[in-house]
Length: 326
Image 1 (spheres, helix red, strand yellow):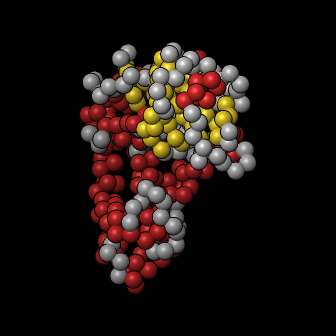
Image 2 (spheres, rainbow, N blue to C red):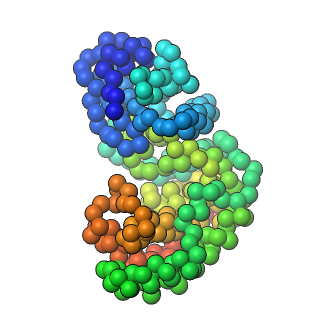
């Protein structure tokens, strides 16, 4: 994998003279580095080469939405325009494409971001309402037929895998949740383009306040169901914090009412999809993703998920009934 020199990056983005090496600090969907130069400090992102135009096409959509978000004055990092753009803020160095942002000097969370998060989600959701009805295709991998679930659980019992004894009690709950997701697939009324990756590691606390980073995962979703899922993640299951985020979302103009008791169905969808992916690996139907770990770790994770299914679904239903969004 090609790594450019500090000078190559500095020249490509007109950053001045490098004041040290590229300092690599993360490899996820892309490589990321910090680069200090005579003009400041910068965040450098190098994407992995992708067959055909898939990478560029995806980034084109993401950067167009990012441009709209910047125009709406959403709190986000400032991109640096390259000298010879390939597309918007992208440029090519050798066989990889790169982009650069000004570095944000971040610090540990020193204040509650709940109100900011709720307001910012509303701003993002108001940028590009789609006007279509029905959940996007990426929701569908969480849906498995009753026959598939029953087949997996029967195979688990036949092979006496460590989690086999947990299957019988979980199946009715899994099927009920799957049925509800299936019912909403064609009726969700509030599809929008969104940031797509509201996670704690993508909220950076700067000197001036929170900043929403990493706009590469732009996608469509139900505004209300994303708001519910994000509030649950950031609230860590605490009803008071979740309510605070969603109240700020609603007060900023976000609409939640249509979802009713299904407001946290996105949490359930994620739970079921991860469970299905790990079961496939455990039973030899798929290859393990890098995040899954060793076979024993996967089996332990499946057991934990299965133990949690009934209580998790009950908790989410109860949580919806206790919200105060009036």
